[in-house]
Image 1: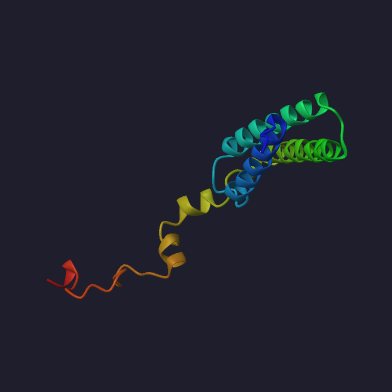
Image 2 (image 1 turned 30 degrees about the vertical axis):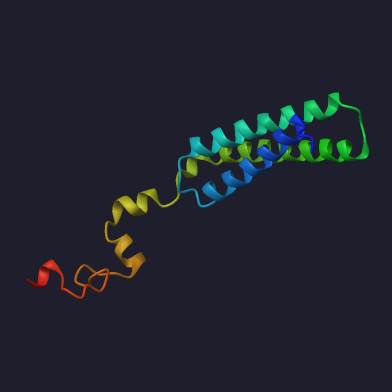
Length: 126
């Protein structure tokens, strides 16, 4: 098995952008984190396309170049959309700061109800 640098870069770029999508899709992490990941993995995809273009063109490499260009365009589009929509901020930040009981309601737990069944009783029972 031969490890090709262009293939390695393109796979890392695609996997990294998938990780970026999973971690940023609900806008619960900072915007800069998403921008950093999109930029880094977009540059990796550009490097992969450049390496593929310097090699002998076969059908497989042509498909890889087209796919790499698609990854680059996808990363650039996602980065541009995120920068344009940056005013929206991180989702729910104001709601969380304004309502401290939100987490308890989300977890459906009240302060009077123990989180785990403790056979020895809680410290409140003593």
